[in-house]
Image (cartoon, rainbow, N blue to C red):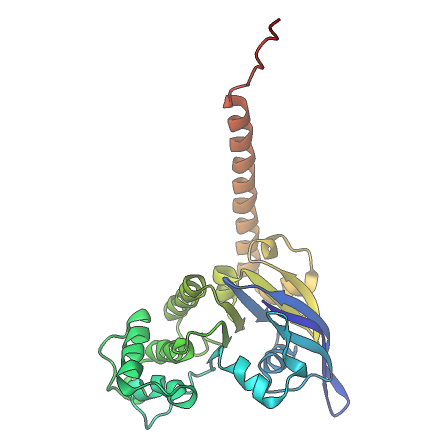
Amino acid sequence: MIELRNIEKSFDDKSVIADVSAVMKPGQCNLIIGASGSGKTVLMKCMVGLFEPDKGHVLYDGQDFTAMNNDEKTEIRKEIGMLFQGSALFDSLTVEQNIMFPLNMFTKWPIKKKLDRVNEVLARVNLVDTNKKYPGELSGGMKKRVGIARAIVLNPKYLFCDEPNSGLDPQTSLVIDHLIKEITLEYNIITVVNTHDMNSVMEIGNYILYMYKGKKEWEGNNREIIFSKNQRLNDFIFASEFLKDAKDMRMLEEKGKIANERDMDELLDKDSPTLIPPADTE
């Protein structure tokens, strides 16, 4: 579990994060959303230690990351995988070399073990036999998948994704969303996604933290967001008339599902046999 307790961060006396608290659990895709300038990127950087919060605490499985020394933080960072915006691959290195980079940095494994692990994660992201290709030979979606492979090569407990669908077409974005969700469930890791992509919100948002001007404006999941009456959230998520209509349709669908579930529960109650206690015998 990652826990944020009353995080505050300012730059030049300008408040960017103001008293933000949240709990992010394993096996979930935890999304941080908000308009540009809302503080979501700064919040993520505070979580991974790129920025030091002015106040508050970041806890990894009960360990106070903000109170650790550099060596202790390094141990936590070994358990963190990071998918950067734009993938951030090294253009002069092959796919194999890019994925092996964290293994070279943090392990003393023999080369065969490293290669086996590289091939394992390449297979997991459906990029078998791309070892010797260079980033310039890959499509945008393939680069993202190489970035994911590199992020999970050390078997992290925590996966951070910064705008994973940036620059991708809608269909490829869905592929990346589904892959992130599958990996999160398969390895039971804590995935934190910083995104502007509303498709991601609706597809994989097990927990959603909506930031507005540095504050936590709303939190919930992708089903609850449909029924939210928070006007700022609705104006951000469902900005166009088309999306507002889509929200209304989705609300009707969800209400129908709830009604059907209630009807089924009532039917099961009626069909359940009544257990009559045996008569007392002398």
